Image (tube, rainbow, N blue to C red; front, top):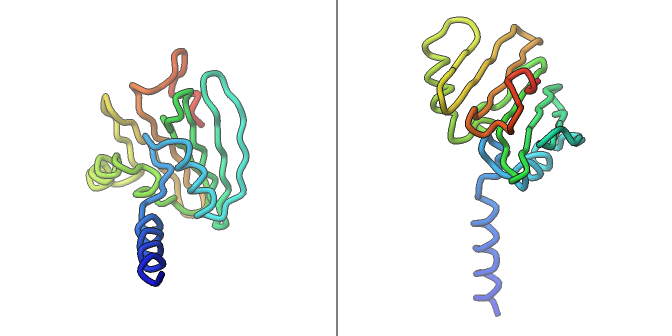
Length: 146
């Protein structure tokens, strides 16, 4: 009996250690997991060809995650008094963002065929957005991501 309990605890420990990130390119379940992890208030609205999940974090940052019909986060946007956790928000695309940060003095503008990140602002007034151009729904443009 003790062995079964120990195995169950070990299994739960492994599951708890898995990253739950609503990162760019992530899925709908990751959006919901982040809302719980952040303890954020959350709302959602239906847009043409997407669902917008808006989360307000306790530090005043608002994160908007755009999920397509296939359940993938194809764009994110943010604003608030501090910058969001880009490593968590951008996931596998964080390295490209980080490279852009080191190449620019003010703000970040990363534009490639695979990823676009636009981030700027000043203390207590940051904003930005990031998206996967190839994953934008038909008829969507960058102006639709706010």
